[in-house]
Length: 276
Image (cartoon, rainbow, N blue to C red; front, top):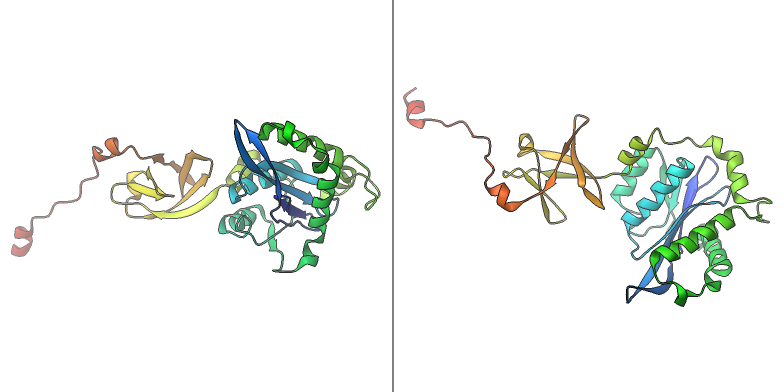
């Protein structure tokens, strides 16, 4: 099972072995391009081996960033049987539920105000702070990319170092048990599993609205409710899924849209109808 550490909180995987958990925690501000911004960490640990299977720093703590770290972890270290997360909005949302359903992963949330259920996560954050964060010269970090490089170096060192609690290195323990976890079917399958899904009704002008932005849809779907799948940071690849086929949508050009010819409706001669 993976446990999620977010903002110096955590995430947890489960490989029929155990799980993961998530909670936000804050890192220091750094200055990038003259602007001082708070940094957030999202990390994922395997509950059995204590190996950090995913970790990245961001300027925002949100569901999209968490999904990115989770996807990277699944891609590198297979699909967990369980995902143990906190109750924050980044982890308790419909999109994560649908993603876990596609992966075949059971999504579990910590009980509210149950400190004992978050003990492993809190211990992991304490280790990160004491062995890495407190020794950093934060004033010498001038970009999020640089900060992430330092974090990735720490993760590699941690995963390959002897841990007294498990009497071996986390990486070695994971290697001895990874056969119990199945890999993704393919890169394409994994990409689709992590797409966000929403339902929208196609307006008469063959458009739909997503987050107050208008998109053109194929005219054959006018008036219908359709399922849209998309990657939040790449709306250019968004599409309507219908009978296993992909129909791309594009951001509406209002000038072009108003000159687009619509399918003509059948004209009726009501005078003739009255005479029949």
